[in-house]
Image 1 (cartoon, rainbow, N blue to C red):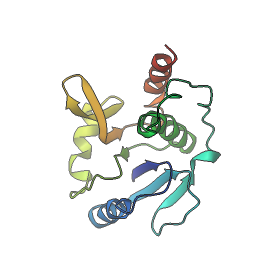
Image 2: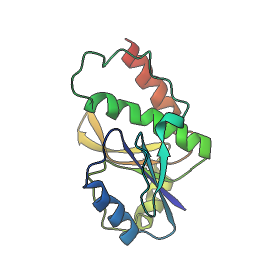
Image 3: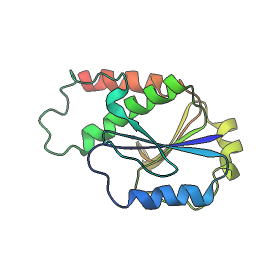
Image 4: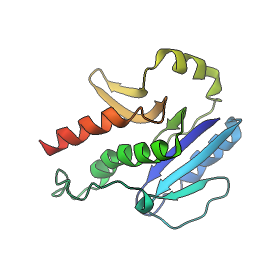
Length: 156
């Protein structure tokens, strides 16, 4: 089974429903999770309250002076996703920004990802910059090293 995880803090944008709809229309044998701080119900989506996940980033001060929550939220999502997939022992996880629409069944290229990716595949934005437009997470512990390195960098 393929697992799709979306992440959002704060009020959900309306366009996220199109993202869910595209997953439902294009996939077979899948589960959709939404990790959020909102208390909501969405048909065909398992909503997980991030406040119930054991992720402690309160001491992180790297983004404390930022007026734009985008960067902190983008950073935090790795830790929430890591905790969730680790706790639930999920493999073959697909995560992407909630404004991305998919039009193909991911099983078309899952074999390539499973055989070529050691841990994580991320969308290249520039030669030295990756973004989560699309992210494939192979195993339930694949994000662990990345999270540790991100936390170490943020503490510098």
